[in-house]
Amino acid sequence: MLRKIKESVTYITKHFNVKPIAGVILGTGLGSFVSEVSVENEIPYYDIPHFPDPGVEGHIGKLLLARHHKIPVVIMQGRVHYYEGFPIETVIYPIRVLKELGIETLFLSNAAGGMNAEFSVGDLMVIKDHINLMPNPLIGPNINELGPRFVDMSEPYDKALIDTAFDIAKKMDIRLRKGCYVGTTGPTYETAAEYKYLRTIGGDAVGMSTVPEVIVARQMGLRCFAMSVITDLGVPGKIERLTHQMIQQVASASEPRMALVFKHLIASLAE
Image (tube, rainbow, N blue to C red; front, top):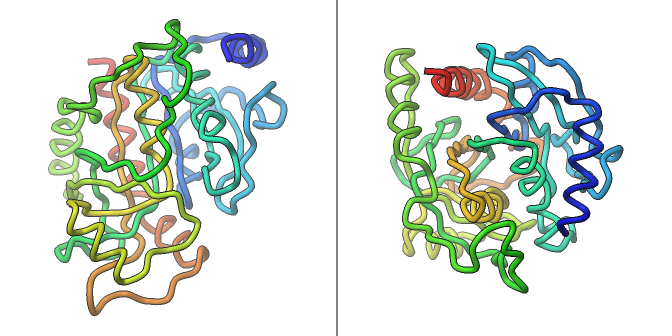
């Protein structure tokens, strides 16, 4: 894997001559966040050696070098998922590459189903913790150069960044929720019984990404901040039939508020 990472980084740095200090992963329906920053260059994933290319609608598949408040940022416009048939080590491979490019902080976004009865469709939920029901990406031989064998997960999501996000949201009159995200394999949406189970074990929202990425990011010492758009409700009496197009529409409608929080949060790294 080390050789592959080096080959990916070598190719990227031929196009990106600036070391990014932050990475951003944009999930379903959130790809247009790039219009909020100054993009200097872009590379399709399929051009990057060993980089997985997403096949899900709403995930464009481009790596962008951008600046925001003079801060160099590398943006993943879309991600691959375990349910697409990729091995879990392929799903998290881009995070390894972003770290080797130089990032110190990772920002992630996703679309999720809400299970907290206080949530509404379109809410933004800051992830304070997670429950992993996906294969752990660290299973297998450990590569010491990438991080320790046993990884502390007592604070997977950076508390200082979370506090800053809520300060930003308050000033901008944006309502943020806070909760625990459950990562599942998908691609099926949950049954009513599964929603009840996931809520019972402590979940506030459920989705099909983010958790493996954060596990690997924490192994490598990256600070993490993640936010979900609540695109539907898995609450008794409020469960409806879902399509991927419905999820995309809600995520896109909520994007301007998420983009504002992300923009100001990234700018705070310069302070």
